[in-house]
Image 1 (cartoon, one colour):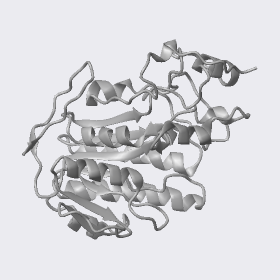
Image 2: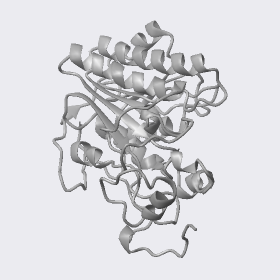
Image 3: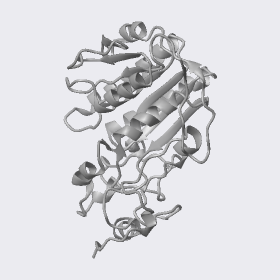
Length: 319
């Protein structure tokens, strides 16, 4: 069957009408560090791909807890085993690479950096060697320096893909380099499409993110009270290997609202009053601008309430 995605964005992107061969349009590389079963977003992407009628190659360090579906082929491999990746991706049409250490805590700096950077290079290069020309990789809002920096450093708010890089620790640096590697590949292969997805905390529900981020302690403004629901995150990855574009594009994949029931302008006044505002921070609008993903991919993320966010009223204010 041919594969198309219906989008609800006001701007409808051009969709590829491709027949997805033998192995889904994506090899889902969903390693988790340390030994855990396939990561949450990898499972969600896999489930959505299988539901759409495609075959999936799942690559992980650890076998899944349940027996794979008939249309899922599991390959046990690690991202530092380049020959294994090349072999696993034979027959694939596209790659969705979600394998990485997701945060710097608990690992030495060189382990975080080297695992993420080498893993990204090996996965993308192995795909390219197999003739794959559509790639999506996990990046992070931390690619410019953010939650793990000693202090917040924002040139303007809301943040978009043009914001300068101020990374200072190994995780942020690794994500920045992964994006630079994508730039390198598309310069060499002009028919190549790579999407780097800058996720915030990927979670099943907003409330869980709020349990982590809804603090008003000094320094809490570094993470900007943001989140990404797991379903829209997975959908963005599938769109990234379906929508017709070439070259390398970076996308913020972040919810349009914050985790906290305090108006964004009040948060700005308290934590970032000296940072210029260049977009709409009314209501509970996010401090990240994900509109590029809407324009190019036709992607959208739901608000946590179905009403107009600017019309919400909350009694909470900061003193």
